[in-house]
Image (cartoon, rainbow, N blue to C red; front, side, top):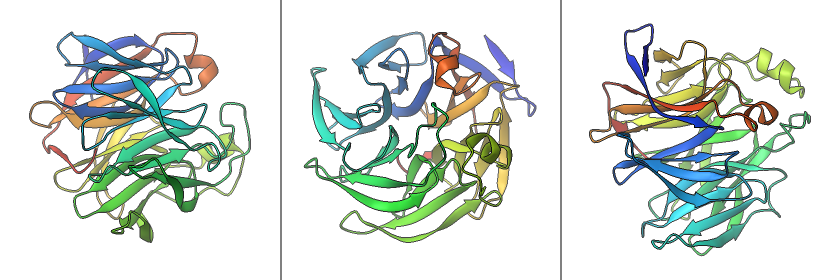
Length: 303
């Protein structure tokens, strides 16, 4: 099954009949992805073979790989990180419950094995008021500390080759950059791309209505541009530093909540798609899909 976007690119269905796919990662010839409400991490080769990698009872979210190849998994509801070894065994890795106010979400792991983890900051699914929150770093020994604060729903993250961490602020209308210091600290905070003014309302519905882009999952390419899943518009956009949108891929009405470049040549763009992001709508049904299309510029940076 496939569709064609407005630019004539074919969108193929790689996986379907899932609940809500997020946090895709290309690793060792497969696309690894979390399915929130079936509580599984799965991996697919894109050619019909899919494997359940882990079952996480408190909702798997962000994924990342340590330098020794072990998989880190965000356990969202209990605000922990788990680690999976080569045998498939899951163990506790870090407890972030004392550092963050609400559920964990996306994560990126750097070449030194340091994990940067975002969180909701407030009860999004329960209709809570929007609140700024922090970003946490987990070191290879499991020690966790806050490295940035006052972020508007820190979500997808990438690390560009020059050691720049870019964070998608989903309720901030922007991507925010930090330089990664030698000790893993974040310095020189600055806008990387601003799509419009940040909303002033703490009412999520009102805030979403004022956002030109709701950046969710992101990935980088070899030219230093970033593909951004726009969580309230049925599209991904390719953005250069400064905010210029240089490409757009529409899904024709289905929402897109994360993206990842992979494939054998790094030019396959995978899209995590679903009709909406609200838990009460996604949990009871199996409407989520993993889509794929081809782009010109291959993967760059991390993850």
